[in-house]
Every structure is written in structure tokens, then in C-alpha cells.
Image 1 (cartoon, helix red, strand yellow):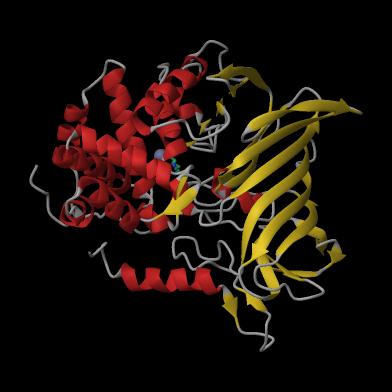
Image 2 (cartoon, helix red, strand yellow):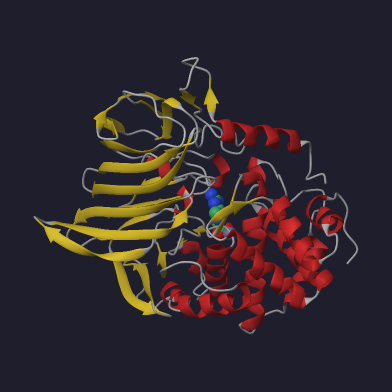
Length: 464
Ligand code: ARG
Ligand code: ZN
């Protein structure tokens, strides 16, 4: 199948780099791990030669001086014999690196931290890297997509961003193809909240500082991490037997549209679970920020972040909640192996908005489909749309049209069986467009490539 514009050969090469992950050195058992996974949408992001299992992050942030100090313990498995390896770290100063408890040589190369352990790491070896670091974090400039990463705010900070953000506040293998579990401890001045992903593990105070602890036990892509510090109204409860933590910036009205929409988080998640299968994580939540620089919402794992623009018209916008919660299944639980397949996240999340809208008394799915069908620019592909168009209509809206075209072709029963089966089979993993098409064909028992080709990448309007 042609998934658009000659990207196939490049994709094959990229996969080979991830697998091999090494560039020659040493001549023997140990080689230098690559400083890039070869994803053309994010040059320099990710690294080769190892796979991270767990990040244990301990950070302290002082809003007065905008300084962060951190200690990261990264547990990884070598996938090749390594003489040295890279972590992504943008800005910040590294004070010390240890590998398996022993001092390691390190240097910076732009936004890379290059670590040379005292001894080579054989393929298959599990190892830990401890990095002590600090400085004034800065976001990564990403042009028209908005800056990703750590933003200092008046009362604290907001770290989030897609396709990259993690490397602005901790050393990471910063690509969704390497998911890992996380323990995150954040220390902030007493009185401020420090929110992050996963299950809340309590707070403790000492000498004017409070430490907030969070734990995400399901594999998480690094761009799905978030850190939100400041004056927030935090509500901690449970939903369906799991912790539910929502937070609304103190600058937003206590019973305003953001608070009202976030209060429906559990209800929306349950609605989606009926269609997609069980909610995939151990905690629920959401964070509404007031900072105008956050011009989007993001599906940060278990706890999406919503920019103020979604509630600016005074309406409790639950469509965006449905979108971000749908990503918990599509994008977070089943993640992208490479960014050119981003329609797999956004097409399904947009489709979930259509489903929720119909359920919540708005336009029917059939109407959403018919309206979109009329205004779509079929010359723009959903698959491999190009970096500059990764958040464009071809990804979100044309992607959703393709999802509904599948539903029309195979019928409701098979369609939801495909979705649920796919999510169960790929849970906690990563996948590509070809994987999804192959899975849908397997369940439907009929060829579907022509359908996906027409709806996702063909240059002409498919017959409906
Ligand atoms: N994945 C997010 C969503 O659709 C969108 C993030 C947009 N990012 C950006 N830099 N504009 O919910
Ligand atoms: Zn989305």
C-alpha cells in the first residue's frame, strides 16, 4: 500500500536504526549508541542502543528563582553492546552521572547528554543511570506548533508538549517508541500544588517545602509526562475504585466552565469505556491551567492538561474532555511507533468527540461525518502528513472520517469489536498504521487496504 509520498523507504531505514541503534566505535563488543531514533518528524529525539524500563525523578522547583534541581534514576536495558549512550536533555547543567553506582564520564552535545560508563554495557544488561542536574529550564522552540516543554508561570510552572517536552526537565529517551513507568517526586514551596501523572502517593512537608509524590505504573511515552506547579484548587477523590485527581487554576472561577467540564471526567471516561473497553490506567484526572500560552489541550497520561481557550466562551466544553480522555486509549495506552502515524491518535480522538457529542444531545455522528466529508481537502494525506501538518485537519478530521468509513463498511458490531480487540492486543505498546489495517482485516475477515488507502491518503474524494 502506498502510505503517501515515498515515505516508506525512509521509514524502513528509521526502524533499522532503532533496532541496531549503534554507530561504529571500539571495533568489538561495545559501540556508541545512536543519538537519534531516526524519526524525521523529530530530528535528534530519542536514542539507540537501550530501552528504558523506569524513570525515578526527584525534582525541586523554586518559582522565585525559576530554578529546578533534579535527580533522575533511569533504569534501562541495553539492546546492543554499548561503549557509550545518549540521553536527551535540553539546556540544564549536569553535575554528576553514575552508571550502576560508578562515576561515569559525560559531556553535552547540544540537547544530548552523552554518557560513557567506566565499562562497556553488554547487550541485554539491565543498568541504572543516575543524573544529578539543575538550572533554569526553558521550552523547546517548535515554531507554529507552539513551544513544548517547561514554561515558568507567575506562580509556578507548566511542563507539557507534543511531540517533545520531557527533555526540558529531565534526561529521557524522548520518543514514544520507548515507553516506561515513572515515579515522580516534586518539591515546591508550601502552599503550592505540584501535579503530575498517575496515582497520588501522598505529600509531606519540611522546612517550608512540600513534596508531592506520583506514580505511573503503566508504560508512558515521555511526551505524555506533565508537571504543573502553582496555585490550584485540587480535588482528590475516587472514580470506579481508582483515584481521581482534578485541578483547576486558582485564577479560573471555582464553579466556572473549566471546573464544570472537568467534573464530568468520570462520566465521560465511563462512556468511552463502554465503547473502547476498560479504562487502561490506574488513575483518572485532569488539570485546567490559566496560562494563555497553553493554546491546546494535551492527553498527558491519566491527567490531561486543558488550556484556558477551551473554556473561554463560558461553555463547559466536554467535547475536549472526550477528546483527551479518548487519547488515554488511543495514543497513551496504544502509542505511536513514529510520528508520521499520528492520525492513529487524533483520528480516533476526534471520532470520540463525535460519539460523545451525539450521546450528549448534540449533532449525530452521521451529521458530523456528512459535514466533514463536504469540506475536506482530499489532496492532504492523513498518514505521513509532514511535520508542519501533524496537527492539521488531514490528521484530525480526515482521520475521523476514515474511522467512520470503516464503521460504515464493516457494521457496528464488527467495528467496535475491531476497536476493543486492537486496544486489548496492543495495550501498553506501540503500533503503526499498517498494524492497525492488518488487525482490522483480520477481525473483519476481508481486505480493507483499499478502503484505508482511499480515506486516508488518496488524492480524491472517496465515494461515500
Ligand atoms: N494531541 C493534542 C490534542 O489533540 C494536541 C496538541 C497540539 N499541540 C500543539 N503543539 N499545538 O489533544
Ligand atoms: Zn488529540
